[in-house]
Image (cartoon, rainbow, N blue to C red; front, side, top):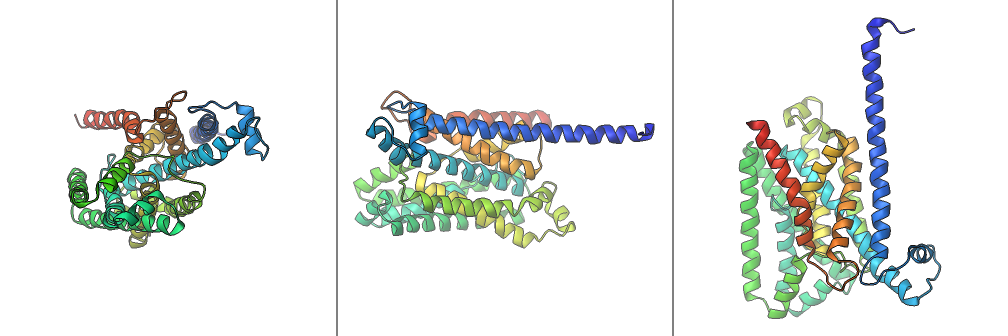
Length: 361
């Protein structure tokens, strides 16, 4: 029998197991929601396809209509997988940056990392003249790799500059302002390239900046998947260090966390994730900042052992939902993806800012 003195500790241990079980069920619910959104993404569009026909096609059979088989395998399946990978990558990159900088508004777009990746792509596409059109179209593997490498280099350089500034300036608000200035500076360089570029390249680049999950082909998809999975694995290797960084770098060092190695791992993971999505899908905003906050509120925890898988699942769900809304099922109208992500993500950011302001007052 338990003694009375042991009842409180036993009660709290039971409550802890209960909360852990509830959070596990929340992760299962997110996984089920992801499966539902995947099927909706495959079924809905300008032409609706019955669910049983999609399942038969995915299992290697033939749909009643050959057109349905082509639509699912050549267009909707690559688009769906691309959206999932992009949502995972952007959500996790936002989580990494918010934890490292201990700032709820930190994310690749706000701190200029996405702008750096865009500059790398712009240098290749706009600076290469007619050859840039072939690269932007992704007609060969070399073009895909070159675009990704250029985006990764731009993202890594910008992230390194931000980290160097962060080492000297502990104030989070000042860091965000400087990150925005980095973004404006990079945007000015892109505008200069646009000014001297050929008209057809300007239009192609502008269309690319709208963001889209539909431009990745089946041949390009393995390259995107390989880079995103590598970035996710690198992020997963930093889980213990990220939990220690929730308090401060000094606290993390006192626990024996190798900060130089951790910082390098965060930079590389963020650069891989952001560059892959930016190169293949365009500069997609708001997913990186909104999804980590949604997961913290949903899971009620700051433990990255829960947040990382939750962010991966929620990021994929949000990206799929944004892709569905952008394509307006039943019509031939396709909205710019960044418009939809802004409509979904901006309210989350405003709620975070209002909550922070309420806590300071």
